[in-house]
Image 1 (tube, rainbow, N blue to C red):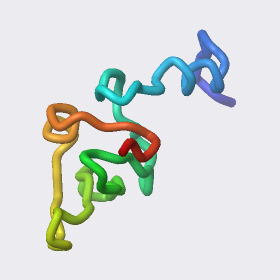
Image 2: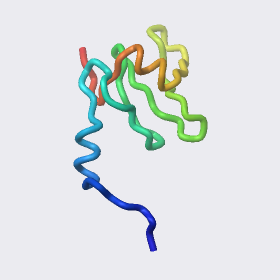
Image 3: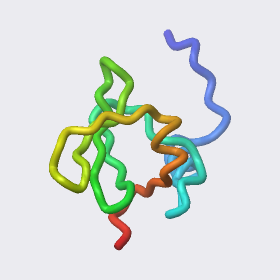
Length: 79
């Protein structure tokens, strides 16, 4: 028995949360989600709730959700 109530269908929720290239909208919350920021891919580490990727020199970089929001992000690579 589920106590979850749905007000919208799941596809409608995903579509509504999809951001533009300016970083508006909310970041995905599923572990291993991938977003792009400033030409680099970042993956959500679920157990630490941080976004990890590499900087321009290939060095590991970890960002919080707030930092990623400030930098701007997209679900697709924007060049």
